[in-house]
Amino acid sequence: MSSDKIKEAALSQFALEGYEGASLRKIADEVGIKKPSIYAHYKNKDDLFIHVVEYVFQLERRRILTYFQEQSNKHSTLEECLHGFFDWFGKEFESQDAAKLLMRVSYFPPASLNYEVSHMVYPFLDGLERVLAKFLVRQSYERTHAAQIAISYMTLVDGTTVELLYGGMERYQKRVEAAWPVFWHGLQLFHTKESSS
Image (cartoon, rainbow, N blue to C red; front, side):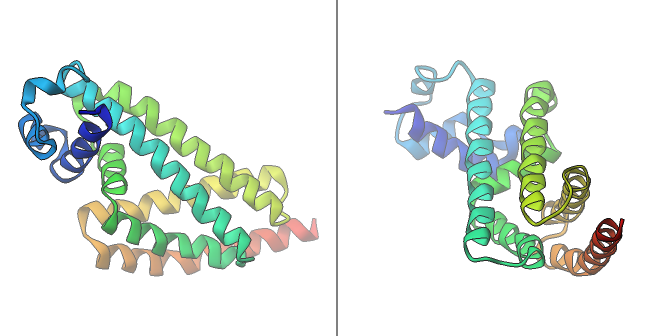
């Protein structure tokens, strides 16, 4: 039995039940082993959880980078790319346990593992801001302004995606559709001001 199979089963359990609700016995049952066999690969539930969360952040980072790369390859406009991300992420959240766990752990880390989780969440978010800033520079934004826009955009993403956990897809879409025109209008004004100065 490989540690990867245990990790995959644990990912589903943690995504659906949270850290507290996930059971090592259920994880073992899903994999077809006895619970003590898990300890041959992981020290305890905390160790398994941290390994799963590390894997989830790596996986979702790759998937998000792939999204932006595909948009670039399709020669999507900046608006299509940035606005389209919300639709993409909503589908990702509905269909992928990794996205569900990423959201759950980012907003509700287990109290006992808050330090360890926060040291994964912040580098993940900072990395996405850097990727987005580079993308904006390629779209002809000045480097310092691109960094500011990236932070603003990630704030919008953060403020809307939390609704996926609290209110579901319909409320998420409602927030995106209300907030997006305001963000985009502000970005257009910002770019016009930047171009004229």
